[in-house]
Amino acid sequence: MENMKTKISMKNVNMVFQTRHQTVKALEEVTLDVHEGELVSILGPSGCGKSTIIRIISDIIQPSSGEVLVDGIHANRGSVREKNKLVRKIGFVFQEPNLLPWLSIRKNVQLPLKILGYAGEKWEKHTDALLEMVGLSDYAKARPAEVSGGMMQRAGVVRAMVHDSEILLMDEPFGALDEINRELLDLELLDIWDKTKKTIVFITHNVREAVLLASRVVVMATQPGRIQNEIPIDFSYPRTLALAKEPAFTAYEERITRMIGDLGLSSIV
Ligand SMILES: Nc1ncnc2c1ncn2[C@@H]1O[C@H](COP(=O)(O)OP(=O)(O)O)[C@@H](O)[C@H]1O
Ligand SMILES: [Mg+2]
Image 1 (cartoon, protein in one colour):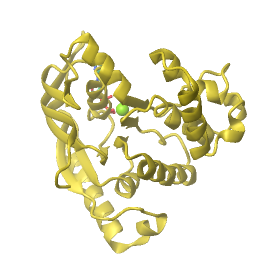
Image 2 (cartoon, rainbow, N blue to C red):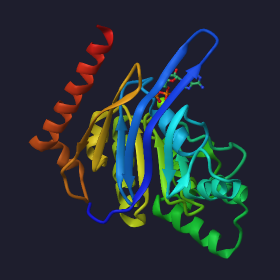
Image 3 (cartoon, rainbow, N blue to C red):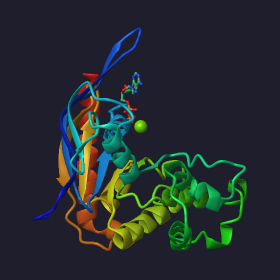
Image 4 (spheres, rainbow, N blue to C red):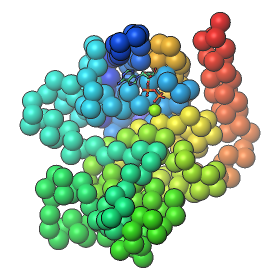
């Protein structure tokens, strides 16, 4: 990790949502650095502020206080020009693939290019290479309804990369898939990460998935949403599913599960 550039930096970030009936402390004093090329997982129970973190990083919402820097750009108070630069650096993957049903898989994947005004041979080739990488070449002309849920989610992943984004923010991207498909996509993501060296923030509430993917698991607690612990996962890459059978893997799973269980208990008391 030495000499690694910090790609995302959050310092003492607080987020308070004020609704008509209540005040929600969604994030309290969140401080988090993600290095260039790192794959970090954010893990925690529903409502602990995971989505809020990536919405703040991508400048969709403004934190109540604190500092957020993405590649040295102030996510929450940069100039319009800087904000545009930020948009181009980031790709989003959500739990629902949100593909437009009337467009082909290829056209769906190319939507960010359209929005950002990127056109030309270079981008067409880039699109083809990405479709190829996730096994979608033969489905490029198909409509979303004609492919499986796993295929739709693969399209969602490459759509987030089509504009040559440097950072992937993934919000429980495979959470709606069954376990077998989810782990297939987890392994494919590791492969994509290895090939492209993107910086990835991967949100999940699945402990096994977090340990399988990440070089570091950030464990969050709820009410108020905060970082409880950061656990480096000391396995080398490439990783396979065989790893999940090793005692050291199970030990991580148990330790983190216990941590979340304790947190659940302490929030009730
Ligand atoms: N726009 C909003 N207005 C009011 N409360 C919100 C808003 N967005 C999120 N919250 C609240 O902030 C907390 C954290 O939400 P979220 O980041 O979506 O959690 P997670 O993704 O971990 O499930 C929750 O209590 C949620 O209800
Ligand atoms: Mg969420």
